[in-house]
Image (cartoon, rainbow, N blue to C red):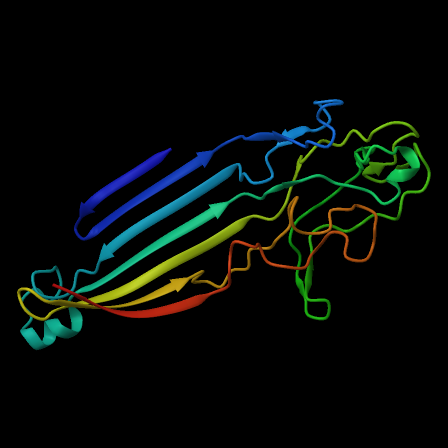
Length: 248
């Protein structure tokens, strides 16, 4: 879904929302049983909203405010422009695992059974300044008895595979805004000078790394299980960049 506003009164923007579904397979077990090893693609965020806007501020000569300003006044208030891109995306999928899977099977498909419907909550908690981590989910006690239930999960029977799906749980969401403020100086008819400041991840919002490729996804391992211990590998914290550009 796309909404677009072309330049009018100094403003233009494009907003689009994408819902997608992408599937892939785990090559380790796919040949034996495709249903067990087939599920959501761990590189695809199912929901993505992006807003991109450019706004030429209505100040200075020929604008709504200060339209009759002189050269000196226009040099200060005119020629300003802001732009921004905001991205909100849902989390990346991961597959839950458990500690003692070697007790129940030896084929490497280390997944628990979905239990009796007890509550199982996920979501980024508060930052722990001692461990430098965020608890995404709280591990359950280590499962030791095949076939027994442990709250929201159960240990598979010996010789069986857990029924929790491949990459069916989702990690933390992503939210970032990149923005630019710039000032254009018309030096002559031919030469134009532009000063700009770019801010990447303007609000310094941490995008936590918890997915099939980042984070300890074991439901009963203790220690760092369920913890976010690093940021998403593709998103950095806030950075500022300043530049001068001469156009002719």
